[in-house]
Length: 66
Image (cartoon, rainbow, N blue to C red):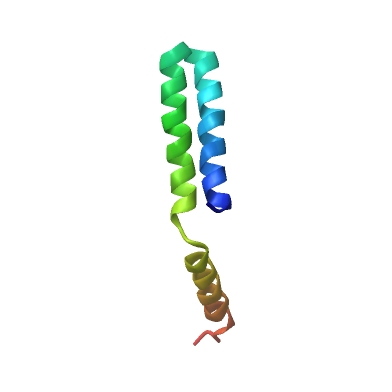
């Protein structure tokens, strides 16, 4: 497990807590699914891909305009 797994779990817990306080048991279940979906979307992109995209953007910014 890495820090992204803990982030997904944390968002699922927070979503379940908020959903449960608003909508009872159904809100709790919906909140857990919504929180885990948001966390999974965030954790989907690996760190290496993010670093590569950042590096490409830096290299493109260094290119002179024609």
